[in-house]
Length: 407
View (cartoon, rainbow, N blue to C red):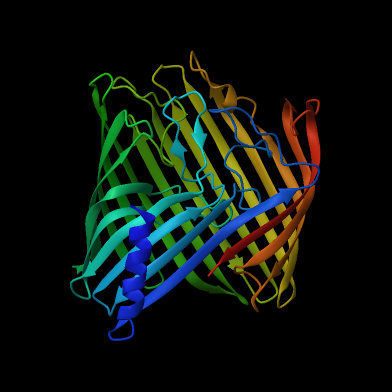
């Protein structure tokens, strides 16, 4: 979409708010940080982007820079138009270089959201356009292990169909060099509870390869359970448990197997089991994530399984400040890559531990926006390079300043 058109629409909506029930609701999310000495090692395309510790998917303390600007235009309770862009050197949504030699290049502005929602009634809504179609994220990793897609399409949500809420969506996404078009059909069923919900997610993916004319079909199936607001002592407990499975050529997203091949004969699959949550009191809180992944390859001997542990207990110093400990560990249970070229995945077992301090820029202890400092040590089972130009070693100390803003 041409940005001039967007700002033209913004101007029209601005004038219309003076004479009607239009409303404009802007949002900003931004995160990033710096590391003492230098940023951690960055490798080539297709390898680990960062070498921060135990694994590739890092915690929110080390996540890659991300800035999202979103504006919602609302017409009463019947219509909403959402437009969002990524700003600056963002590494989350990239425009891919079609030469396939330089990989992906960050652009100054990347259109992220451009969709409309129509609310037919209190229980029925429709959407159409380009959007991030995803569920609930994990606080410690900022990942979406259950359902996450950035696609162009449309869908419908129907609530109170008996005891459940239903969602159906169809969307398309394509590889950056436009060699593959992926059609995705999604069905979600949500069963509301008094203080939680049970949700299932089923997806069918059809990948059309323009180069080979191959067509492959894959699927994802999973269920998750959420419960919040359980009162235990002086605090409240939140839990999220999920089981997710994928099979076949899943082109992108959390359920793509590490052994996935972009051809019709790929039989790679993946299991994800996760338990995450937190317990918060006025004086302290404990965050936790346990994530087990089992990647199975297209060869009978290919398997890669591991368990990621992440714990973060924090103590409230005053209404704006907390201090605590951040601990992460990866335990590799199986590692046999067969003929696959997966140097990036080898020898990831290790741990990271850090003392942390966080300052909330508003009068609450646990929510954003925050500025935080982490001082700790990374340990790996085998020697690796932590900083550019530095000799390989098994351990490395670090100091990290991090920020995360949302409104």
